[in-house]
Structures are given as C-alpha cells and as structure tokens.
Image 1: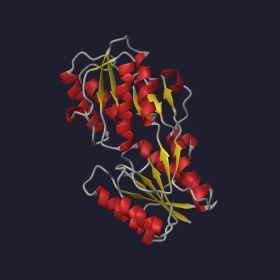
Image 2 (image 1 turned 90 degrees about the horizontal axis):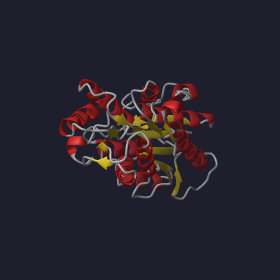
Image 3 (image 1 turned 90 degrees about the vertical axis):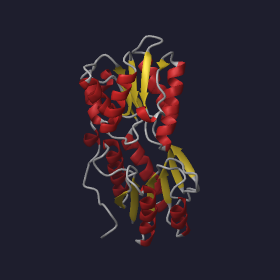
Image 4 (image 1 turned 180 degrees about the vertical axis):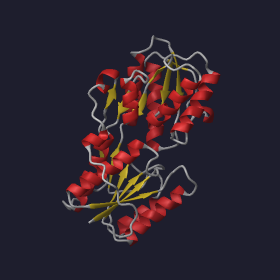
Length: 306
C-alpha cells in the first residue's frame, strides 16, 4: 500500500514540518505502508493549483490514501472530492470546509492562551508586549486569536495589531521574523515582552534583538518546541517555547490512515484532537530529548515515480 502526503513547505524550510513528515513515515512503515511525499509550498505562486494537481496525480497513480496539511480550509475541495469518489481516503491536518474522511484538529487557541499565561509569570502586570503575527493559515489564525485573548486576560498590554502587515510574518521563516521584529522595535522602543507566533519567527526576532543591542531586555515565548529554540531556552537566550508534540501529530495522522486502510474502518468525517503539548521552560529544557533521538529520520521517498 502507498500513501501520498502533500506537505505545505519544501523540505528544509521548517524543522517542525519536516519532523511531522518523518513521524508519519515512521508510523506508516511500522504497518507495512509506504509513504510518498510531495510539496506544494504555500509561499510560492500557484500553490493551490499545485496541491490540486498533486492530489489528482496521486489518484491517477493508484495511491491507497492521501494526507493533506491544509493551508486554506476551502481548498482543494474539488480534488479531494475526486479522490473520495475513487474510494481513496483523504486525511487532513486541520478540519476543512469540505468533506474529508478524517481530520486532525489542533488546539491552537489553547496554545495561544497557555503561551501568554506563561509569559505573564515572567513579567509584571501591565507590561508592554508586542506580537509578531503569521500567515493566513487556519492554525495560525486560531493561534493568534488565543494569543490576543490570553494577553488581555493575563493583565499584559498588547501594543500592536498582529494583523498589521508591518508586523505580520507571512513568509513563516526566520528572515521574515527578523524584518517584522525590527519594525516592532522601531515603532515601540519600550517593550517588555514579545510573542513571535512560532519558533522560526522567534529565531528572526532574536536576530533583530541582537542587532539592536537589546537581546536579554525583552522576555519572549513562541510555539512549536523546535530543537534550536529549546537549546536557546536552555541557554537563557529564549524564555520558553510551547512544544506542540509534532511527532505525536504525525503519529496521530498515520494512525488514522492505518484505521482506514488496514482495519477497513469507515472514519466517516471523524475529527480527533492532536496532542496539546507543554511549555518548554528553562527547567524542562534540561530534560528535553531531541526529535532525532526519539524518531529515526530516514530519507523520505519524494514524488510518485517508482
């Protein structure tokens, strides 16, 4: 049996996205299922059309199931309908606005609230906090809602609109985080805290703070629990990263595929929650086990060609 996974970012762009691919591959391999990975990088033009064409190519190539990490909850509706009409189960990461066989749903809002609750333990009441927003992706939109709500109930003062393009890292990579944080530092020189929406953005924020000579002045938390941010938290450079258990998310997606293909279960639109995770504080960073020590990172089979 073969499964096609359509990843939303090119390999090597984001360590968490890469690790999910390896976790999915490892879970399926244990059940004797081969994973093929293709990429529709949402940062490039025509990514929706590419996602659509990859799903259709998977059906034409005779894959037994398809896994999609959704960026736009409304796309690729027609291609997924085509796959399901050919009795190819489709599992999505995030719940779509169209029918799928099953979905993994992230507790994004909760993550945002928990991140800001932790940040509030590091700052005095009324501290001024800036937020670096993210791209128009379902999980990141929900995360931002949680961050904004969390700051308001935690007694911290949000100084900027994270939806303002000047402070919004739509690229989802380090360089974008550096640019948007530099804008924040220029516009709000008196900052006590900073919430870059994810770890890649936080790396850019650290670059910008270093260049401004302000690293260490501003308390920072982010999301994903990536190895480099855990190390920076251990070193006292960063102050915490919410570990979303990306390995657990990949495992959960693989288990849904196995239920459909091996067990023959009709998942019938089932939604399951991904692991919620935990905040990696400096104390927890001391005992954190790197992803590659928990999971074999064997080379991924890319494309549909034999």
